[in-house]
Image (cartoon, rainbow, N blue to C red; front, side, top):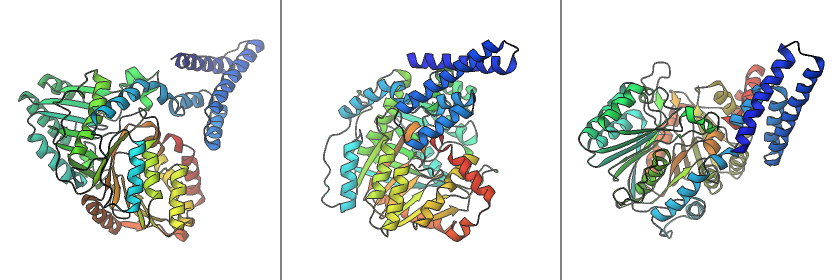
Length: 500
């Protein structure tokens, strides 16, 4: 894009200006000229920023960054602050995905007669905004934590006869990763088609020798948006956070668990790992598979979505509705954020949220405050210790406004809480890869399964209640007594909320 080349030129000019102004003995006239040049570049960038019509506080934040952090602020803005980029960088994928999903997903209107009013409201909205269809003939099974999840995964992978399609944000070359790779290699050698997508940033610890080992065995392996191709066009800022497995078109998996020993709770530094995954059979699996196939086509140029071999739906007896929804830079709207908001807005009795990163946007915060003031029980569960300074303290910065409105906030004590769960009224739920933060809402490729009236929701409810036993409620009086240093950390971390 022309604008990309101009911005790269601006970076060079800013670096040159700072160098000449501060580190050379050039003439006063020359230095003055470069001061003016630097000022013009920053003012041009700010003018472009204002034209994007963001929220006032977001615009002012980036203006401060550009003005008061020479060079670093401009580069940080280019690679973290330009949400409009996703419209250009993934325009072709967005158009192709929209057309393909319309043709391949089953077009039918589910029977809503047995649904409650809040469920009907959510279903109507979900069908209107998502590219995928609501599915009925589907079975879902909740898998709690790593041991249960990976045991089931490995068992199903070993049963594969036709094809295995796998897509992960983090896939490590540790003991667990090698176990799964060994299964994939064995299957590929036995004639099973194996296609493997890994995120180039998230899976940076996946060793090249392991990738070669899989390729040599016949596994088709592709990275998603390699850094070497994406640095100067800023694609590296948009990551594939999806976790998808599809086996023979009959069994699939989606949820919060990546592949690494820490997800089994076997990392000594992290300790116990609390997470949730979902196994899917039936119509909704074909929707999940379509999302994988579109990602595969994007990175490999191999179109499989039109092939009946990969586009066959196997119906099973279902007990509710399941809507598999993809979001990311390749979707025009912030679908997951809007659907979270809609779930919260339709709640009449309870809203239970569990998320490792709680950096909600203004609309979701407002919905939570309003729900609590209406008498809806609102619970938010986050880990006691997070895996980063910014996420730890940015999360805590939102506690005061919610506590004042009666929202119950719980700190999970047993280990690291990584599941991404929302349960509304005990009969409407979301489980998937999307956190409740700005990165999942705006930058990452995500996929969630929304469950309406399925029996598996009761398993989520039971697990959440068990997690409550391992959590400590944060009381307003206690929390307000935290030190000024803690408050300062929260305020600083909150400044970076837009990039978290």
